[in-house]
Image (cartoon, rainbow, N blue to C red; front, side, top):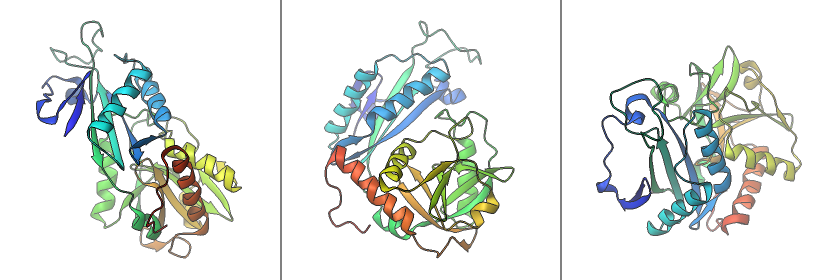
Length: 291
């Protein structure tokens, strides 16, 4: 498999990450994941905008322009012949010695950029049947709007849910639902969708943007407002969203069915409108679909 290492496309075996790379030492870096369908990127501009925004928030200077990054990612997608799958890309502050918490000068220590591809078909069965979730306290840091490579809090939450036999973790701070361990969180009550507003406590999801647009086209009201665990218990439907899972129904929380315990009509409609958004950019994906 070919990958990007700094400004070159090379065999994966050629990549050497230094012991003193600040990504390894401090998780000092930013990442993103963009989805491709039919060999074409979906919402690439939005992902790259968020990537550059994240770098700006941690004072990390990009060694390329947005246009150059788009060109490199497209070349990688093409050379690896990815039809439906993901492109993961990240940048760290580079290799600095001796180890020091202070940011090194970017003119002295250049950042390190990598990108790789994975072929991942749409999980239509899960999108139809839904997943289960456990409620877990949100004990992460207060800069969740930054897509940092430091994901220990997220993976600890998801591992807690998995140990209990659930697929996902729904995070809360003092009873206020924030998001899931690796996705944004939504609930539906009386035909209205609720989701936490953007800010420092959640990641501004690209899929969230698309779903808000899809809901507007479908005529479904959306309120971006905090909601509580108690309100979530009374929800008619619940779902999570991310680049890799699109709109994923949550049919059970802590062993209790959400609504009917099956995918509800609102999320099903959103899924259909989301597919239309994909197809507008990438062409038909609905052959043999279970949705």
